[in-house]
Length: 343
Length: 293
Image (cartoon, rainbow over all chains, first blue to last red; front, top):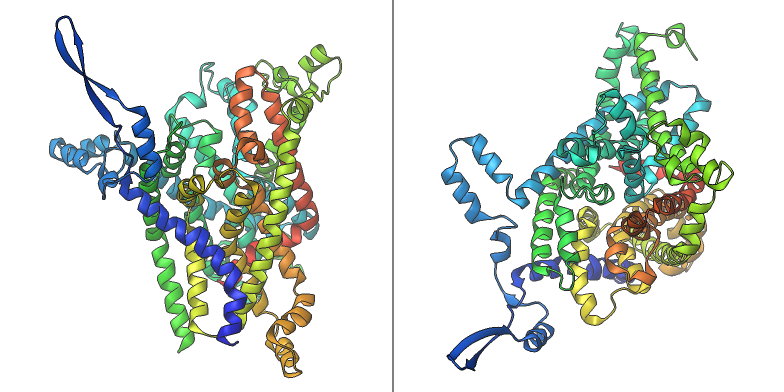
């Protein structure tokens, strides 16, 4: 295809991506370097019978005018990144100096909101992802053993939790987990503790969020693996059987290696999606117990009246860096594959 | 060709069947429960004392005289004007899907037929863009959109959703067009067609299976989106998903949680129908990316 034709064909999609994906990333970065103007103060002397006292008041008009003239605010460099609600370098150094061991250092870090959210995001990602991989494979094998007629039904039912909007799905689950909902009430009976409330306990809330994460993403890994199972070569399976391999050995030594490329694809997708968890937290109304990097951005942007663009921008850039770290191994591999193919 | 070993029930098989059965129960139960419960009153939906109340609707019978009530749906659709959100969703989803598919087919076709190195780089960039959390992009839109006074409009949300959709659409259609033999459009060009005519008259007629599959996923992305629609749409332009979420806050205060339940069921029902009709395409679309790698 000629360069010129290629250009016209790719123009709409490329300009959409540049304007609304690439530029916003730049815009987020620029925003994160600025900080809102301070309020304009006027000092006036108020004179009474006992002499004059200077009083400071906020010049609302001038503040509003300044903010309207320069909506970005004043330049702050990397200040926002290092402040108390983000990387908190000063506080971290202090905790490091004061802490007696690793344990107390970590518990000190957990008091800082950024590290707490990062800890939740990472725990969520690295608990949900392996669980979804293993269970997805197990269910795919199980469904593959079912009679043909039942497989379609199984897939139909499995697709529902995956395709429903995250916010809607987690809302459904949160009603059931409520102290008066079916699961919550049943748990109270099982543990014989009428005051048991998932929504009041941080650790139970974390478990609930992760259970939701598994429920929501399991169908994706299950269906991908199920499709992969259809392509396992029958000859190899038969050869394994002739050689006397048990079902379990065949599974571990023939089927799983065949599915390995799919495993890395699914892992990549899951890591990406789990790292940006935030909708379940909103639906479960769990902000008091679990915050993720994404919920910070939302709450900064929702700040009544004047959104904290700088803070949201800094968190966004830090999130993007996190995603980039997760993605690097895959990108390096794709790059290598491409070069191998090219030469 | 089932051998004896295949049909024998081993422990392993029983375990795997049990696992599948448990999973299907866990997958389906929340939906069945919520759909059934949406026709009850709150006292039954949250029936702490006796869970069978939720099934038989004891309180519903006492309060309304029959064991099913449409009060939740009436409250959501009429009182809280959920129908407006449904209309907004239809408009936004329709235009998002149509525009993304138009852009995506043109771009995907070009990428599939170009052997130059920059085609690879565009695909790589798209992969990276695909990984960007939507909420971080949203925080980049807010300030400029406020400044230009286009915040809150349906059109703005449509353009943003189209752009966010592009990386995925491009990848899917690119791998789909790769499977259409090059000879088809090239022989048309030998016969004197321009590249665009070859695309229009030779490729377009055979591309629909791939376009429909991709379209389903564009639909799901736009329909289920929360990050973009909740932050970039003004109240009267809100779609179903953010409306449901904001419902939750407001109706809980007034004790009308059944409105939210009814709205949730109304928002999920179209997906149910979608899976019913397009299950095969959804499954093939899910795995298309995986098989190509």
